[in-house]
Amino acid sequence: MSQLDALDQARVALVDLLVRFGPKALVAILILVAGFYAGRAAGGVFDKWMRRLQLEPPLRLLLVRTARLVVLALFLLMALQNLGVDLVPLIAGIGVAGAGIALAMQGVLGNLAAGLTIIFTRPFRVGEYVAMAGVDGRVESIDLFTTTLSHADRSIVVVPNRKIVGEILHNYGDIRQLDLQVSVARSADLEGALAAVDEAVGASAHALKDPAPIIGVRSLGDNSISIAVMPWVKWADFAAAGGEINRAIVARFRAAGIEYPFPVATRELPPLG
Image 1 (tube, rainbow, N blue to C red):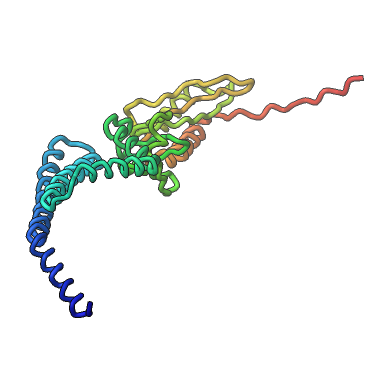
Image 2 (spheres, rainbow, N blue to C red; image 1 turned 180 degrees about the vertical axis):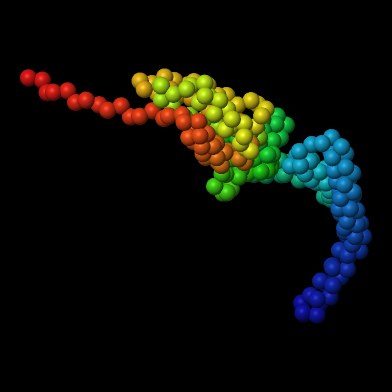
């Protein structure tokens, strides 16, 4: 057979394929294009409905994308059916492939499941200060796979969601309580010292009035009285508030003449024998 005959047969076969499958392929392409735009439209409508329910942004984004994919998948099945593809073996193959992919992506899917759990149960919200998984910080964002915290040293901590769900979580909210203390001599005016501490805390721009600060005698020593100073502050003021309140207490103690305890001198005992 000559090359011209082979080329002629190939041309005839190509024309036959175009005649047989060309219209179906064109219709399938049109179906996919229609599915793309239908998915976008359905996603837009679904997104507006989700916004009315005031769902968390990550969950809303997931549901909108899922709706788009479902619509596109339906149009894809219609396009394949138009081409005459047997869908039963295809669906079975997709199921087997999906099981393999799920097995290989256990960590990713675990983070996704944990992220959905966090979004639905809401153990913490954006803006609250939390301690979890050995780290602490302000919650900046809650995504489907990770939770991002901002630390006091201005660093960013990204925690996989599967490390959060099922573990101990300490949620401080948007305020924290300082745990300060100051000691005065046993001979000092205790009521005056408590009043000075109360005035220093009350004049602080960082200390909150509600909840009310806790100020009282914490412990008694041999030559001193320890006063607990525990005001509530915004989490952003936690680092600066302690030093500012301590400084104010020192100034008021000096103005009132309140004495600090002097160290007790230890007397060495003579050796035995």
